Length: 318
Image 1 (cartoon, rainbow, N blue to C red):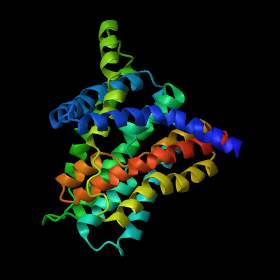
Image 2: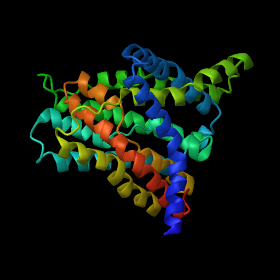
Image 3: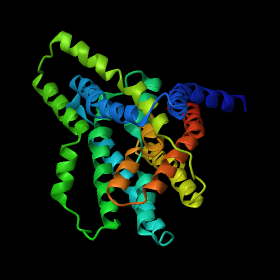
Image 4: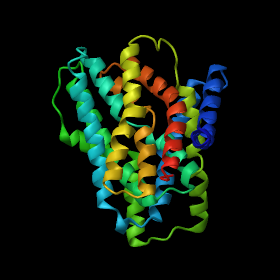
């Protein structure tokens, strides 16, 4: 019993700073110190400046010539497995097309960039750039493709046709993908960066983690969470509990290393992505349901992350 509590407290100590900053963001917005204008402009700074520069910096120094193909396959197949299991299982029980698309979208898509990355920094200091590239380039790209597919199929608009060209263009215009491609180019060609510019990039990249967490807190809403409570709780459970419970044992069976499993756990167990709300609203899904699932999954993660990290530590994976 003492070992269980020790491992739980270890996980809590790692997670607490993350959710403390999120709580500060939530309270500051609730008290009126942060407004929608701040959230909007700061989201732009994170999405288009701080995060891309952080990815560029990490990838520029990574050993990309040795990306483990087995890990690429594990991440991609894991995403597809959860996506199709959720979609197939939910279809008979959710007749409302808009709710179905929102439910599936929120269940399979994690908030790795804004939550997972800070947690990995707490766990490892500087996470393995090679594995981060795999998740960011391959995993997040597949997230975007599947999100567009499911939301297009079940949108309320008359045009249900999937346009591959539009999907590819949207992916290539994503600032994270652009930053990764430029980072890969600088890495392969060994292009030097002026030391003063490099330090400036580092200062802007350092904004990414604290500002992202403040924005997540400011974006949370607990209004009318009880409506559609069954769908909300089920989706949050899939996102934060069932996904890692299914996929981490598969990774162990594949013989993945402790670091690979640790990074994978953080990826699989993060709460629902804030982008689920944005995508669902823009593409005609039930964005109110998406907002409730996002909020509830964050509440779940306050408990599930310390427990999960404690279990992995007991298994000597972390």
